Length: 250
Image (cartoon, rainbow, N blue to C red):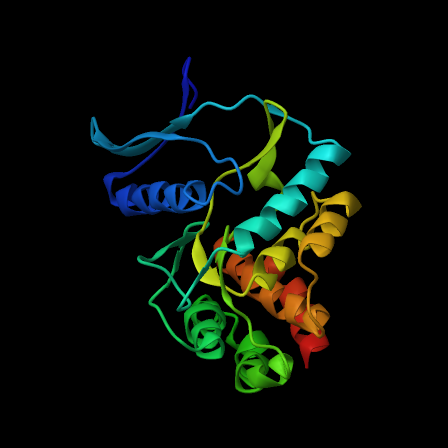
């Protein structure tokens, strides 16, 4: 909901941790100074509902200059790194819990906190026959996709699809993060999953910090996490896409 000066999201009282994690994520992004994010006005419980009140932004469609600038800014954001993968708290990806317990090992973190978590949910949701066995094969072979590549723990937006960024007051702005520290390629993978980013964005990112050899296969791996999440939230319409990604990875 929107009033004169703020954009307010509401939910049941049980949704408060999700809104608090969003506020913390926006603060984590803001303190880097790399990309503009909306200010958090307040977050809490009122009249039996949880809420987060954010700065109201007047969004415009990004042009080529804004896309280029956003590519540069995302590379700058990714250069903010931590010693370990994960984050100070769990958050959500959509409505799904996203586990962020810190780890020194990216492969273990991605296998257990990301891929296997979504595969287990898919089994619970009735997709065992389609996904359990091939998904487990990918999890077991994870190291094969990282030969010669050791990702650093970059600060990530975490849910960077086309609907979570725009232009406000002549500059890029992003919102609705699912923040953690992980392989920067995961953010790039999400941008390529549902569209919304043009050639100028990718050219600017590559000019600022080129992706490393083997990233094409890893992008599919990282996209699988998000497609499985959509399958678990929205249902069978995403099953074909999940199976296709698994087939390409295997």
